Image 1 (cartoon, helix red, strand yellow):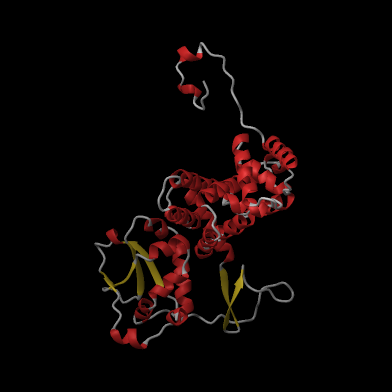
Image 2 (tube, helix red, strand yellow):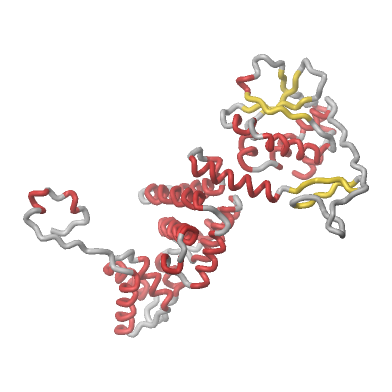
Length: 383
């Protein structure tokens, strides 16, 4: 008998058999055998190409030999290079994986989809890409968690340097989320009719952790928010002019903070300013990032009809909005964006739609004249 599922054989049969377990062959052993065969056949090949074929065999000498035969047949009489092997097998170079991962970490969906488009145009096989990219992220995880990654993964010194650089950009929980999503994709794509759509959805999930609600996705969202907080500029007023300085106020030549400059008070918004904000609300939402931006796209803005105080109420429909309400940083981000656009401070209250029965909140109506004649700075930017 020969089987890959010995556990399914009845014990009455096993008791009458001698058992020999065959293990997967190591990459070095397969690569050495391939080199011997290439030398015997008089075929020249790059060592990098041979090692990739051996790796693609996944521990099976038979599969590795079949793949090598395909590569030789396509380029009979020519030197077998690494690029030629990638082309025959429909695989992707690790440099492409590096560019894709860096854009994923930045949340750059447009560039990630463009890289995928380039691979498809070049004739790369999507199933092969999913498997190889999962393996690439596995190597990153080993670099992140292993004390001696050189012993754990089989890559060149240059690729190892890039892996260490990219491993420092992320954390273990994020990499495990990426691997989980692509492992699930690997099972789905095998018999799918729309493979490209599945791959695109998976890549967007990597870029947008807010699309998922499990623990590792929440941790990834926290990573993104922390990065945004580090990069967010801080405003201060110097001689009446506001400057944006990344990370804090600009020091004097002696290393101290600017002194002797009066801080001009920023005026508060008037009731009519709420209409200006309403006219450019789409642009305000466009300035936000991450989960806040996702939830704001389905929010509404209102005012209290019985109050003389111009308070802008942002009303959320979905339960996920409760997490944003409890975070004062979200309110501060909105206030800062609106202040930059209209030059005035506005009081903002974030509320849930089902908790407003006792309030007299009404939608802010924007008159037709406002729509036609008032062009806010936000709308000008959009054009």
